[in-house]
Every structure is written in structure tokens, then in C-alpha cells.
Length: 316
Image 1 (cartoon, one colour):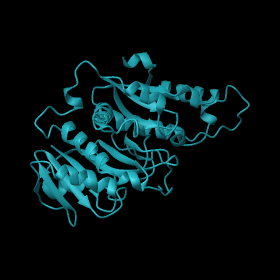
Image 2: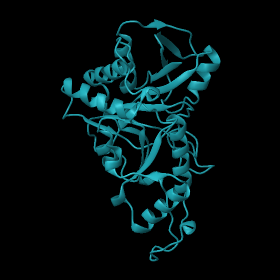
Image 3: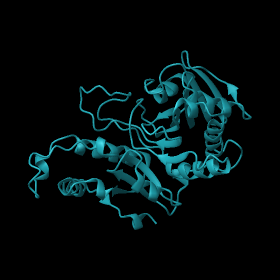
Image 4: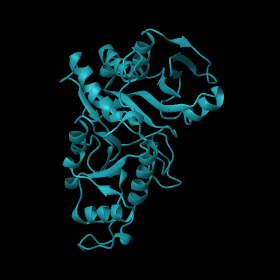
């Protein structure tokens, strides 16, 4: 089983962490995938390509077909953009589960798809915060999760690690070094135990599936920063399109509410189940982000799907 790390040469926030990682001991050039350069270190493979990070689909399957190695997870390095221009280091799952067949995804992926979320995300967010503190990047940089969004298409557990939010910060070598150290320590390349292995999790089996809220998921984040919490997909409001035929009615029949919110929840839940075998998946709602008719519809649908709802204390 191998971990694929993926970077693109055209993005400083992608190639700089990859270069910092390659400067650490143990890397060897290995068999390339078409025109994509690749390097090997223990059970980790680092791939460098020249395209946009969100368009090289199915790298996990292509690597397996070319090498015979089974891919366990895929981790991408990328830049992050934000209207605020706030410096940030972010981690997030990927997918566009709310898009309909025929929609053109603006940043890769395919309509209705959500990649299995990498179980390491929660433990790595906490580790990233620790490493960023020790390298004096906090409080200048915000350390945060982002909601599920964009491509490329993968079928193995996947996460993005991003540096934001403007060119000045994308090029920061200290930020690149922190991301490289996160991966070095997180994958146990320095000889220590790797961090965030779901297969070795024992008593803590509760997994947060975030529903609602803004792109940076603050109410979900508050829970995920606690030790022992696992995080999966985070569906912000824009991934839950809901069309109420009559917003004045309090008891709108759930079946009357249009939009792809049901499909989005189902795709995220199914992908989460595949990434966390044996896990207890609890939907955590950002209640304040919903109108009452939306909250009623979502909680009703979760009940129909036998998806449990968790309160903050349920994750302790």
C-alpha cells in the first residue's frame, strides 16, 4: 500500500512544499507515469506534473495500473485563494456532490461525486496547528479546515493541503517547510509513528460529517480541534441547494423541497462510510446556518437514511 503525494510545478504553494520534502532524506526517482515525474521514499510516492492541480483525474487508478502498487490515499499540495486574502494553511476533502449531471464543475471533479475523505484530516489539522505554532506562523496564518469542494476525481481517500491566500504567501518558504514537515511527520517518514491511521484507531470511532455553515466550517472546527475526533466531509450551505416551493409554510413536506441537497448528503455519507470502515458516523449540523424549514427537512431526511445526528458533546 502506498500514499500518493501530488504537486504541480505551476503553483508555488504546491511545488515549494514538494521541493522541501524532496530535500529531506530517503527520496529516489522512480518509475514515471507518462510525463509525470515521480519519487519514492519508503511507502510514499511523490508525483510532479505540469497541469492544474484539479484536472489530473484518476491518478490513483492510473498509478495502480502502471505500477501494480495499491494506493492507500492521495494527498495534494495546492494554493488557496480567499476574498479576505488572509494568510492561511488549510486542509479539506474534495468533491462536488451537489452538482447535477450535465453541470460543468468550475474546478474539476464530476457532478454528484465525493471522494472518500482521508481519515488523517482531523489528526493532521491538530498536528499542523502544533507545527505552525512551533515555527511562529501562528497567529499570522490561520490554521483551518475548508468545506468539501473541487476536483480532481479520485476514488481513494483524499485530502488537499493548501497555502493561502495571495501570491506573497503562496511563495513563503516557511509555510512550505511547515507543510513538508506535516507530511514528513504525519506519514512517519522520519522513523516515528505515522499520525491519523484509522486502521489502528481503537476506542475513538466517532466520525464527524459536517452539514451546513460557511466555507471554513467554524462550528465543525471547534469540535475537530479536540483530540481523538475524526472528520469526514464538510458540506457547507452552497453544497446543499434547497428550493422551498412555499417558504411561508412552516411544515413544508420534505418531498416538496427541490434542489440536490439530498443527493449531496447521500454522496458524502457513502464516501465517508467507505473511508471509515466500522466507524460511527454522526452528522453534525450548524443549526444557526439553517432556516427552520431547512433544518426540519435535513433532520427528517437524515432520519429516513438512518444517519445519526451528533451534538458537540457526543464527540468527546
